Each structure stands twice: as structure tokens, then as C-alpha cells.
Amino acid sequence: MRFGVLGTGMVGTTIGARLVGVGHEVRLGSRSPGGDRAAAWVAEAGEGAREGSLADAAAFGDAVLNCTAGTGSIEALRAAGAENLAGKLLIDVANPLEHSGDSHPRLSVCNDDSLGERIQREFPRARVVKALNTMNCSVMVDPALVDGDHVAFLCGEDRSAKVAATGLLGEFGWPAERVIDLGGISAARATEATIFLWVRIAQVVGSYRFNFEIARQASD
Image 1: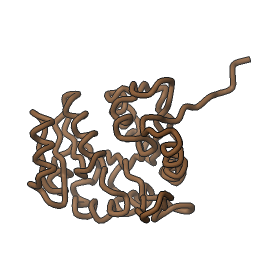
Image 2: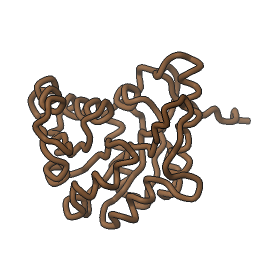
Image 3: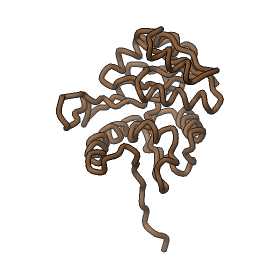
Image 4: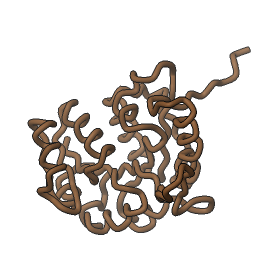
């Protein structure tokens, strides 16, 4: 399968490398194609890895992953092209995190809206699924880094798109029973807001390699 991965930061390059590693073709898209970071990723990821513009990557992929900085995701997706996203699974991994210069995270959109919802409104023909945005990128692609039955959340309006996203997470090592469907895309308000708790936990435990596990009531 062919994937377009938008964004050449740590999240995009990590996910892109994992996709190549499990046998997919990947085009990594950036605002400045041909840059040193993208070229280095292609050289390291090996066969199956290519790079180009945001529009190149979106057109190339049978499915697309938005790994751009959340505050710039709408602009990046516009550059990728609505026609290149139409009808495709679009997994949104971004959080609309504003960098304020202190240790307290802020979201550019929250409470009564979310980045996931804005993307779905802006690109109504894309099949948006919010996923993997509640953990560090190393854990996204290798859940075995964390002990226990920790979970990945997803949400979206298109049922078949969520099934496809669950299948992709399975290729990363997430058993289907540990992928929790939270419902429609408005649930992105909740998953994006976990960044507040996530950052505080990381500061306290001194590591990014942790995740959330759901403890359920024991059977009677």
C-alpha cells in the first residue's frame, strides 16, 4: 500500500520509517521538498521511501497521515490539496499545541471544537480518523516499548475508515482489542486535551515512554 506522510518532524519521520519497515511505500511530504531533513530520512529509511512536496505526498498515498505541527495543519493540508485527499483515509496524528515558552502547554483550539473536527469540516470528502495523538511517536509505532495492556484511541465519522485505521495500527503492533473507538470526530476534543495530562506525567516520571491503560471492573 502507498502512504503519504505529511510532515518531516520526529512524528512524521518515525511513522514513515515504520510504514516502510512493514513493507509499504511512503512519500514524505514537506513545505520545502528536497531539504536536508527529508533527504536524510529517505537515505535512512531505504527502499520504498521517497520525499516531495505536501501535494506530492498526498497525491501519492492511498491513505494519508497528517503529522504536521497542529497549529499549522490546516494550512499544510490546504497545500496538500483537497482533491488529493478526497475519498482517502486521513489519519490525523497532530495536536494543536502552542509553544508558549514555558512548561505549561496550551491548545489553539479546545473545549467546544478540536483540530480533528476542523480538518473534517475543511475537507469534507476526506475520511478523517483521529488517532495516535495521545502518546510519544516511539510508542505509536512500537507499543511493546511500554509494559501492560495500554491502549490507543481513535475517533471519526466514517466507520470503514476507522476499521482501516485499526488495521494499520495492528501492523504497528496494536492488537485490535487495545484500540478503543471513542465514536465520532468530536471525541478529538478529549484526546487532544490529554496533552495537558501527558506533559505533566512526562515531567514527573522523566520519560516519554509511557501510555494510558484502562482498568475495567473485574467480572462478577
